[in-house]
Image (cartoon, rainbow, N blue to C red):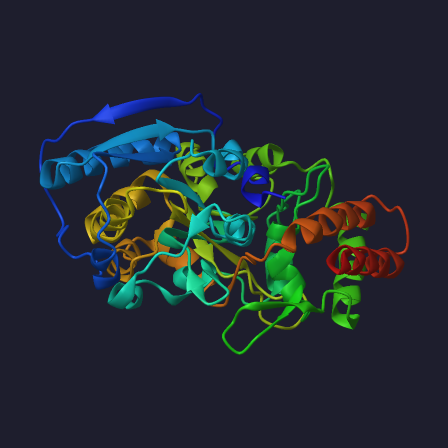
Length: 415
């Protein structure tokens, strides 16, 4: 399941292509790794790149600079992000896909397993990125994309209603009650569920989906979501539903609207809603999510990046474009400005973090864990979301529903 589509991060837009000719230069395109140079590859005169509307607006300038410096033209194809993953799977094997495609780290396992992307050789440049960003695209010990943005949920706070950050979950609830708020906090659920947004609360109960290896990668042979900590979280979810705080009628749009109306001082959400909130004239601060279960809340950290097609005939040029152009502080800062998601490149990350809101999301991400990119996650999302909806809808005992979910996930993993 594509959690990014559920969160409404990307707009659906028609596909168009824009051929770009050179105007100005930047970067150091000569810095291609020795491995690539040794391949003796004949570089084609055009790179095709798939990207969404917001990123295309930035990439136009970058592509012009790249073309001017290298002579390689760039064909930008504007894509609906909801279709990119499947289009890569169907078109790359037929030789109709792009050389480079924008995407999310949780696609990595499926795309790598299907053989439509190839590892990107970052070399010494790997250390220039936030570790969580490169870890997010690490699959079976290899990095499969050039990361450009980091995102996670945090506690967005209306500073007029709540001038100070809450120190505990109970403090948060008490503050909301003291100002007569309709809700102690807002969190989207919707009729499909949203285990992604609820995950930091779940982890505060000590409940995680999979065990992790020493290197931080997920071990799908160790399904831990069904342990007693998971059951405690499920019971808490039921309590929140019974008191009216969690509801399947609370869609993403309604949660945002309620926050804009002042229905709660607090909104558990991500950077994708900040622009709308600010346009509504609300002054906000961003804080780590307090613990509901007694342990540290650990949000999923999603990372956006650019994948390298396994069928590209332009590997040298494509790698050059990614590492020496997309991988520059100026470009990553520009991408940050159109998406409000912290840059993956450390130099740009540090610059963006001077903004208090970006800094708040960054602080919340320090306790985060990478969004799982293993192929098994598609089965997990399906049952996980459905079970949380069942609990919130009062369709049974939460412990029994959680146990049934665990069995269903395990059966799917065993296939």
